[in-house]
Image (cartoon, rainbow, N blue to C red; front, side):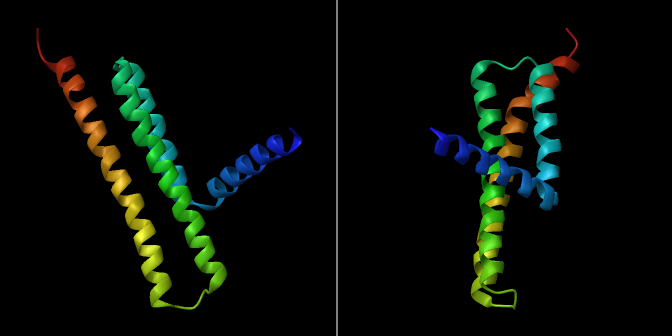
Amino acid sequence: MKSRIQSFAHAFAGLQAAFKTQPNLRIHLVATLLAVGFSIYLELETFEWIFVFSAVALVWIAELLNTAIEGLCDLYSTDFNPKIKFIKDVAAGAVLLTAIYAVCVACFIFIPKITELWTPI
């Protein structure tokens, strides 16, 4: 049981370290808070919450994996290496795709609801 608790402590330490060192995670935090705030304000249905939550989670997961991959690459070599550049670019591309997905989910869910608020009855 102690090792299970310790594994959670290591995971939280990793999140804290990533948050302190990665400016993009602070941007993701602001976007997450905005998404949750809009979701609460617009009173999303359960299935809509699932899409918003999944999109947010995917972006965070991709960013954390990208951070880990970049860290491993930098541990291997800080000199320019075209293979390392390729690895880092692909990992960054994964983050970009998840962010685009999250924006699309937000547009599909939030725009119709916001339009309803502004449409005269």
